[in-house]
Length: 193
Image (cartoon, rainbow, N blue to C red):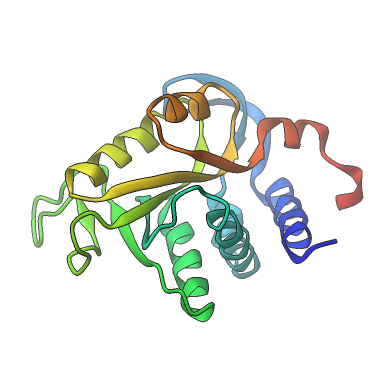
């Protein structure tokens, strides 16, 4: 088993154990659902944080266009960006992080995008997402990044709920990868337990 497969399997186990719930819930998209996956419960654990960094780093290497920075939306994307940025530095190919706010601050810097002031216009950025449902949140953040002068090299997600989000992102001509899908959780591979 490759190191990537080992890390991916362990991360799946952590997500299944700490983040996956079968219960009625209203999603951020406004859609009702019979299951919920709160990735923060896994990603904010030390092991989960390290595994996300490792898995996402490997996924970034497979995108058609390389990137020079990574971005995530507050709050779910912040630990994803942190994990990958730290590992990228250790790997000798530092990727600086950007945080995209849901709305611009009304005080202080009053910015919508934090962390990219030192990056030149046209910097290639990959947007990191915890869960993709309709894709609207990721596309909105990508639009904000583009308006800020960045080029979007792709979107990488921890989980694709398989509800049309990946397709919507790809229709916008943005490559989209997901480490896991809803189907992965439905079939729950027995070798993980």
